[in-house]
Image (cartoon, rainbow, N blue to C red; front, side, top):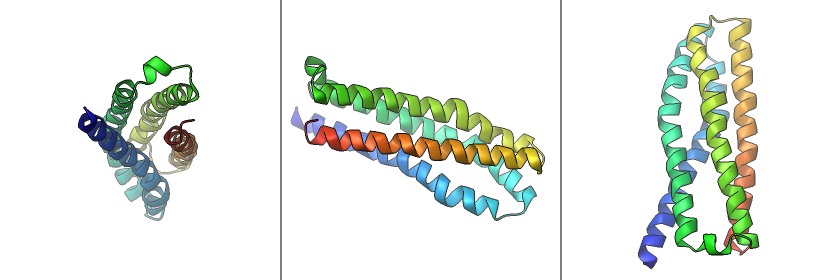
Length: 155
């Protein structure tokens, strides 16, 4: 049974890193690079990226969340939900689901609209909105990371 727990933990961490890493890459590499391109290229790239990214990131996020649930249940958190660990696990779960919804319902539709907006003030405003939303998402990831570290030490 311990091997199942190890595999679930490993996969959970892997998919969480993938999800978090995708957001970091978008914020610090993709968006700044796209902004350095001519407006027409920004529109073409931004629209294509906005259609592709949610098809990859959302399933990765869902897998990370589901594996976190499996990890918690197999690790016995349900029998100890009122403990510091159980409360931290529950807060992490709620925040993880919230971040997945944040990306799917706020960031993805804004990015998808880039292909439909002509370069100019509205396009620039959509890019600025995406930046604010993705940077805000990083704060949520920082909180989850803090929770994960706390849980490792029994908090």
